[in-house]
Amino acid sequence: SAQIADLQQKLLDADNGDRAKQRWDSIATILEAKCALKYLLGELVSSKVQESKLQSSLQQSQASCSDMQKMLMEERNHTAELEAEFQNQILVQEQQHQEKVNHSSWK
Image (tube, rainbow, N blue to C red; front, side, top):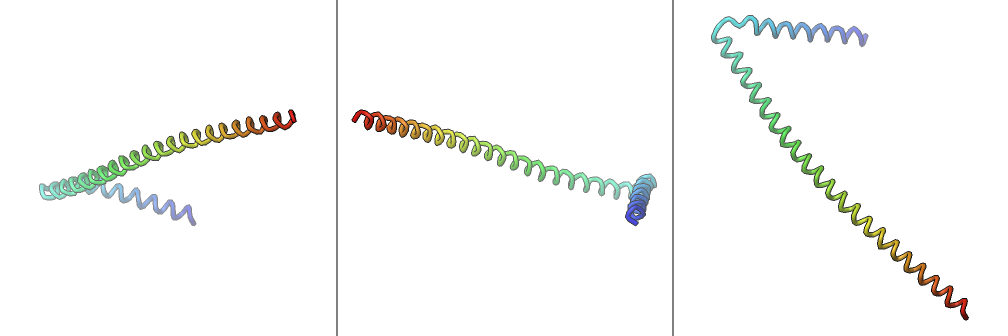
């Protein structure tokens, strides 16, 4: 059933494609040519507008991506600084503990 529906749709699509080609091939008068040209120019304008919108969206996405990468780098740097500070605090505490242990063993 699904295969039959798929084949029927393919036939319809092929038939519509043939009709469009026949329609363009059958342009015989200046008026028909003007109408076809007007239609094509409308499609061109529509495509250009869509391209412009997509280009703008792409630029916004690229800027957003760049901002996110910058924020990520800043967060990584901040994390590295915190980790270094934490390691330094651990070292200081270990030294203080060792001094206490050494001091109490002398008593």
